[in-house]
Amino acid sequence: MDVETGAVLALQILALCSIVAALLAYLMRQSRNAADEYESRNKRHVLVTSCDTCVGLQIALALYEAGYKVFAGLLDPTGSSPSVKILKAVELERQKQDEPDSTSDGDPQQPEAARARGQIVPLELDPTREDSLHACLDAVRAKLPAGEDGKITELYLITGLWAVVHTGGLVLPGVIEKQTSSMWESMLRHNLVAPLRTARVFIPLLRIKRGRIVLLGDSETSYGSKTGSGLVAFSASRRAVEGAAEALKNELLSLGVDVVLLKPPPVNPLVLYASPVLKT
Image (cartoon, rainbow, N blue to C red; front, side):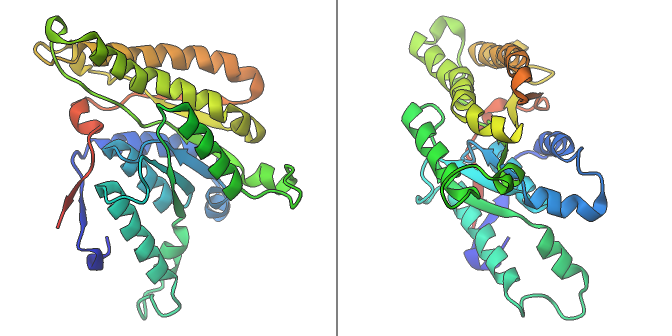
């Protein structure tokens, strides 16, 4: 990370890497030719919906480092949240490395490393709000290549929206006996309804490219099943996502849109969906 920003990203959990690795393995399995790998990734646009979370930000950065063009969904892309600061630092570093004299003398690997990186475009997005989703859809469409008359062209088919990765989540711990119904409804709205809304809005754009929707389910070793975790309602909402993903996959099969379910590692979701932390 650029030291001039005075901010260093503190990775809260190393186990997040397994999520990123699983996602990248899926996204890149059709790009096995090393000679064409960069060109293939560089023409693929991916929307990561909730980069205000640790898991969302890390997935966005991993895809960027791998060469993808990433639309990073943020509640307030012009604000001063840790995620916004980190993404600004990444963009500043990219601009410096794009300068002709920014590479180290005698380091033949540096130009290739800089070339391998993609692009991150922050966009305002709240997946729980229908108006925000449609505004984000319009923003994505405006930034994707299209014909001069606004119609879909062959170039658009090559570089259109390739994937939507939904990384939002809300965790409100507490034993069922003492939780309010509004807490359950909030978790269902963020954890189940929001990804379904996101899918509904972006399916038309994904259908054009025969893209994919990536959803996060419950972990293999659910924290909600542990005594005293206070995550029963949260775990229920995540298991509901798994059922929805399976049904949605069958529904979209004829449209050529895939649905991928990733199971996080056994990490406390209070950390997984927390805001990133900056050390100054």
